[in-house]
Image 1 (cartoon, one colour):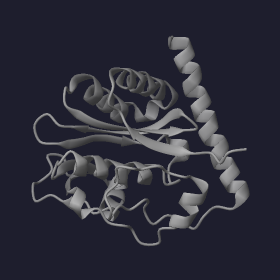
Image 2 (cartoon, helix red, strand yellow; image 1 turned 90 degrees about the vertical axis):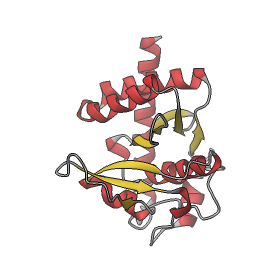
Image 3 (spheres, rainbow, N blue to C red; image 1 turned 120 degrees about the vertical axis):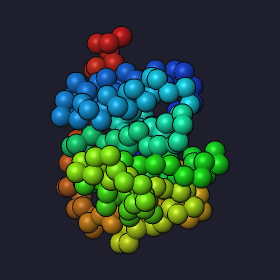
Image 4 (cartoon, rainbow, N blue to C red; image 1 turned 60 degrees about the horizontal axis):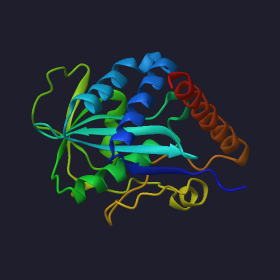
Length: 213
């Protein structure tokens, strides 16, 4: 049996955009607690004529994504991983791929609205607090990220991810980092549980696609 894979790629065609829109709708149904951020992402995909989008697939099925709006000052609309599979380095595979896209498209910097929970995540990869004061400092902090500032967080278990996740990020710059400083690799039984969670989410999304179609 092939090793389960999580692969990140750019969304560039209308069919891929339509697939992502339907995927986000399925996530809103599955995870209503994340409705606000998902609706913001949906608006970014649907309304922004100019955007950079990356989609992470697990065994071929959509699972996680990021959206960068390019209208006006480039800004990260969302980087999203379903709640049940957070802290498994999936978001940390999306971020360096995103930096790679910025590098290729020659976008020198983006703005990020970081919540208290996500601030440390972005900081680990090189994002810095903006000198501009956040309009809602009690809710989020404005940060800035330049692809040239991308760094490898400490305690990154690269061999583990290459062996067990086989993350593909061909657009990542040479100084790319692949994850934040996550705990040591899980035991085989725990990894099996993670894969089962990933597959259950993929299955639920697939059923939504069938019903919507």
